[in-house]
Length: 183
Picture 1 (cartoon, one colour):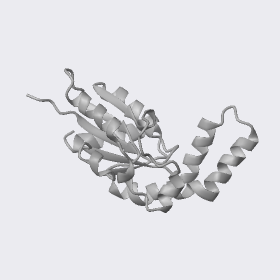
Picture 2 (cartoon, rainbow, N blue to C red):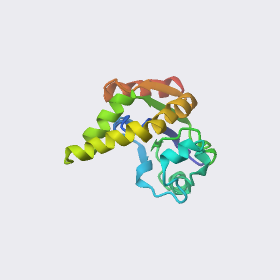
Picture 3 (cartoon, helix red, strand yellow):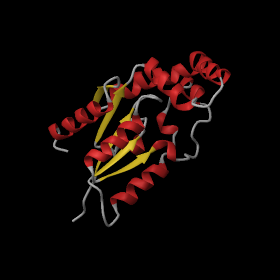
């Protein structure tokens, strides 16, 4: 008899808490395997995210075979975990990937909070000009990618959780939702 893990994707904008929530949820669930989108190099991934959004944000242009291969490998391994947690920004929007996801969670983090977190995370040793250039790029170009996630990913997720809540509370709400759904 084959055991199928429950696959949960966690999406949000950059700086929204995907990695933090994925790691904390993994600790609570115990028998979970984590996969992090940023750990992969995807062939044919758009070089310019802003241009990709401007051209319609076709999530199927992303060749997600590396992460799909890892999911398949996990599903066929000798010791299949109960859960696979995906730190993955696209929810159900990629046709090849969506069939693997059992529950998609969107962490709804306000854009100003996400930007502040990104600055704190990415610029611990940066000079002020690096910070200024990052913020300037965000305002001139990058914000459209954040808005794309709010407009496409958020409404295509199974549950939306307030990203300003403490991470422990977010994990608690996810666990409650999983129980309510019999996962």
